[in-house]
Length: 349
Image: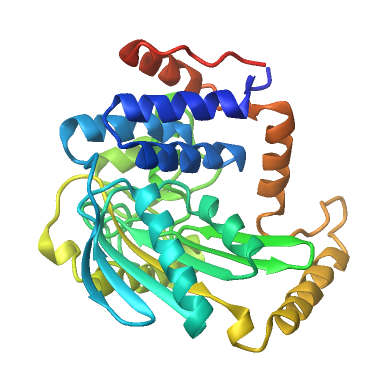
């Protein structure tokens, strides 16, 4: 049976109202609701409204701050560093993107590093508006308070999946990348465990470093396998270390400080092609590559090659007209929030 679909506007109202009822200031509530909903619109449903309840629980516990501003740690014409003070991640990242865009318009590039940010949701959700404005976004994060991935050849986890997202324009739409430096994620591992299912492939390592499909191994001192898997995980491990440097090390706050709670170290970078080889030259090149991908012959019986993000944007367009297809685990969680805050639950369309 297909997943039920829900009206986008109704889900947005519900999520925004729930965030406000939990204590978030109006602008922050709207940002959290919009970014989480974008995750579901694009098909990244482990990082969409599935996170709404954990976010609001963080507000109750005090791990997420409901009000206030980030602290400016340092600033140049190009780069700023903020202490996020555990404010809501979606709101902080949107603020950082706006600051980086302003700097890139003047200097060609703008960068904001954020320490002590709360969780930032689905990284791909931030890319389309930047690409639509003709700019390029690089966004990455790690959580210095926890570990999920062991170093190559090791058996004890020391860092998180450490995703890297990017977005840039082509003449016919954006390219969107959102790739973790592990084969799977914490969210998907938790979902498989809750559903009592094995992964289709060996994407985890057990406590002894042996590959496994069993999500329960993760909760028995196992770890997420680095990107590249059994044969090439050394490459994913190296990239995971790079993300650690770009996030916690540049922000000046990370694992060496033994932080607690749920959070993120974040790096936001915006590049304006107009200040480099020129916007038209940029689009000519990205358009050539897009055409080359689309014209590439598929393998026998396979789908035609596509650009990263094309499927997500197609899902989003369908959701905007037909409603959002929520994962079956999400509506019951929203129902509990509706009862908790005395809200009307959005109905399926």
